Length: 182
Image (cartoon, rainbow, N blue to C red; front, side, top):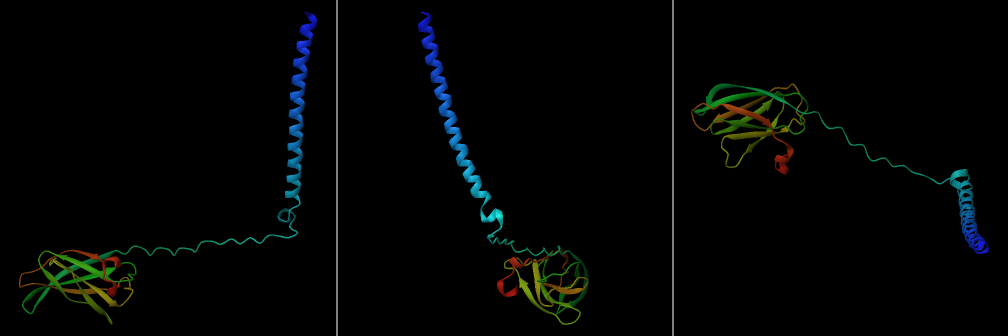
């Protein structure tokens, strides 16, 4: 019985030794392969600089800074009637350059733009808002951009002899304008 136990333990020991020897052989082969790969990288032209590889870095184009927001200030005053119609004079200014000077007024009753001017040469086109008689506006074709601090005078007339009051004035965004007025 002692012989049998010795034989069984001996066989198991030989099996473990063989398995470990096989694993050592596999690890040696992997290590040799890595050493070859490392040698290839170490001697490459990129690492040694013998034959440098050109590298070109292309930065995306810089986006231009956004223009500062434009705020408007305005006031209104009743003026002499024009052709029997009540008239109001709106004086407005912008605080930053406005590339496409376009403005829209909301009146408390039907109204329309008579004219809009700045000191010096100016040329405007009226904005008519379809089916909204209480809205009127204009776009300056000149000057462009509208310079901050310059007074714009805007004459708005009522549809009749009854006074008109301006409730709101706002800048019209280019996307709201017909292509021909941008």
